[in-house]
Image 1 (cartoon, protein in one colour):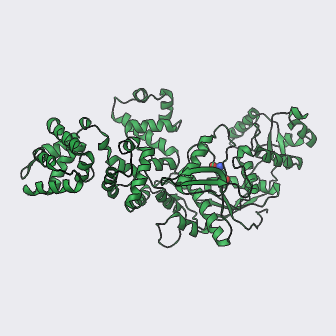
Image 2: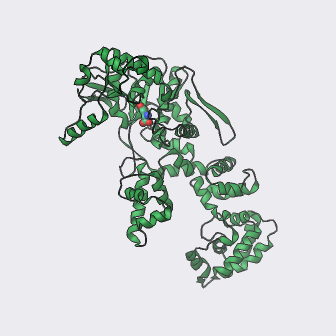
Image 3: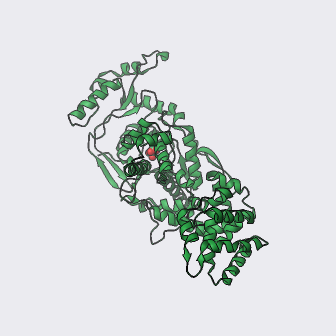
Length: 588
Ligand code: GLU
């Protein structure tokens, strides 16, 4: 039974090979992190330079884009997962630091598969001439009909190579050859002639995984458009880039026998494989981009059921969505992200973060994310749960990757993030929160253009101890972006905090009216002086400062939640504060 030969290469080379068809999925980030960490851990063990390759698998021309590839580079760089070899990427960090990532020190590039066609074609011709692969001239419709027929007979479809193999080699070559080179230039695909022996994959995580004879059929290596299939390109590239270890998601396990069959046909040594456990939601379903659609669909359906005024037609009209596409979405016939996002906005639901960009926009820190995703299927042993990427790079070992699926516990990630944010040095928080605001909350950054200004520092001091994410911090300061005459007072808060009469202290509105002159009297309008003045006012009434703070909060922000009251007042400034209080007393 053929198995993969022993690997004898001095330097460990790992690679992350995303298809640039969208944003980087959080599962992809875990794969990249493990590959990155393993290359570093092994380089240190062996005294060799680390070699982690980033390869862009853009052979699906219709679905790939350069901007998606760039976005993936950006996401990886943001997470601190830097590649030693691969596309060059320039990054300016939030501290103004400049970094150039990538390059080609071993001369194994280019790193975009679409730029490697000559290499794939060379190997294709070698296999065809050796009769280990063959051109197949059947039309796609012919094969589709056969596939449908097999399905209707409840049989697994297998490609029948009889006709293709009956063509003599010389004729095959002539029919394949372009007309410009004197051939017939017939449309065709190239298929591997699979020997039909059983194949065993030696997996570092799952052990031996065996595939019976006949499970792999004569699969396509080169498509009719002249581009290699994923299977072919991946095998050629892993070999020609000297990749020694392929760490990838378990979803790829069933592709691996194909790759092994191909390596055997080409006389390549197989790399060492390690397939990582699937990442699941807490309910056990596989975590996927579709989760966004699921959440949005559920929100829309609940709203439609509850409120007769809400119908799919009305939603389409309000959101500008195409009614037919929306109907399809609601019937689970498509999982469009655009529709999911539009419905999320319409019904005020937060869609679950799935891509790195989602977590970034939601104000998560890269160090919290890498710490958290490192634990999805790996552990350093002992009870150690909090660590940085340097620790992962030092300790990472393929043998500590688990077999069972990993649960994506969002509460745990949030708690990692909260810890990282609240324990950050204040100067760093000021800088990083400002950078985040520039990228994801431009109105906030516009009101506070300078991260070194005392007002921004004051804002940061107020929110840092009580926020879970940067977005959370921004939400807590949203009252600063509203014009004084646009504050909307939450009716419930008005009722409870301002109108209700407390037998001992009277109404909140009366206290609010009483505190006006106190605020007017504060000369240097900063948190300490404001605090002292309100405290003194509260003391004259034998009250705790909180009793004064709540009515003030409602007047200043419209709600009962805000940063500490002294900071809230100081951030607004005296004039705005007084304007809001007067307006509240008159209108609320
Ligand atoms: N391009 C493949 C993907 O994005 C990865 C292939 C591999 O790791 O072998 O899923």
